Image 1: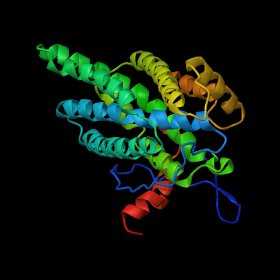
Image 2: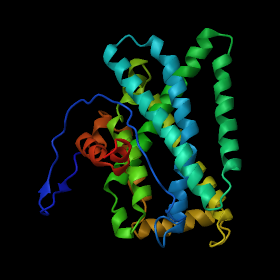
Image 3: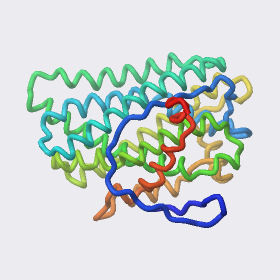
Length: 305
């Protein structure tokens, strides 16, 4: 969906969609040395929820790159191959950046993230062991299952990316450095939102199969986000020791305040994904994503501007 934006005069304008873009990784540079732990003032649970999700993304993104690397030799369509290579480059930078920035940020604020990272690393290691199956046919089948799962997860992250680009963080006085970190990442998720879906279709993964993996991926991601938010909250001396359900209740309250994406909006995005004729291009705006990436403070800082 193409969203309206506002220019400096307050006039509503609709950005022109640029059509297909060449995906490329971008150098970025972030400095969270002055960023408070509760980087959204008066919204500590939402701060931890978003931080926890992005802290755990690197392992998943590395797994995406590994699966696409294994799938690439089977792809003979030059256009899809080029998109896959661009996708892998962006995901690799996401993984490296979040691992460094979020890890340092949370540890600087006295939170030990190693146990959480060890758990997620163990899970991804177990998944990687499927690459060692003796049967080439079975290895291929498992790879295709992973491609279906990635297509589902990428729809979820595209929806979140679109939300991050349009959410009024400034109204909540959120820390600009963290906002830029998540908007840079969200913009690239919107920019490459079609790739995993197109790859799944190339491998003849059926729509029903992708819908099932999307539902499973969404349930998994929401559960993981709640679990690891609880992990951060438990180490935060300024907060009660909420359990998972306590975190969920606090998130529901924050959603009602407009501090985070509401459940009904997530549900709506799920229904859109399952609708016949769905196309990933219906989520977000490439023009908006590219426009943000051209002005991102982190990208400009890395370029020396």
